[in-house]
Image (cartoon, rainbow, N blue to C red; front, side):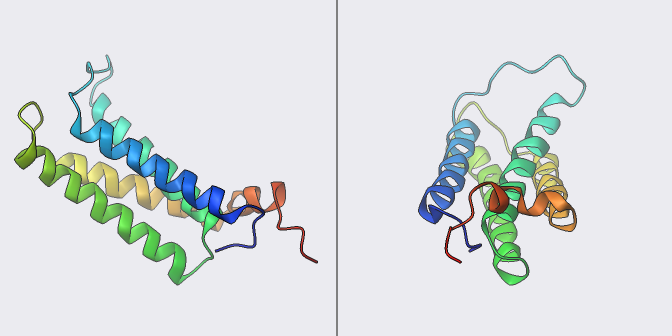
Length: 127
């Protein structure tokens, strides 16, 4: 993890947001937004946010890549779960691709100055 103040809070927030995605993915589907392929944009955005937050919390390299792989696995797993565990949802491989694309785009924030916004905002205070 990065040297953040309140590290458990930030990891907990990340895990909580993953939980929100799980609940939303397995609950009754919301009304479709009036945008073409709107649900794909929702998938991409949700997983972008999760991956971008992982970039904020986890160290570069292997730690953040492990988080990214975990997010892709969660996205694929949720699609399978929608097709097998729910009556009002269906599995859509295009959703899994949108999820993975969102993770990839979120990881790209690690190549920008944005990667350390949280670290600059709440450093550990240990000098």
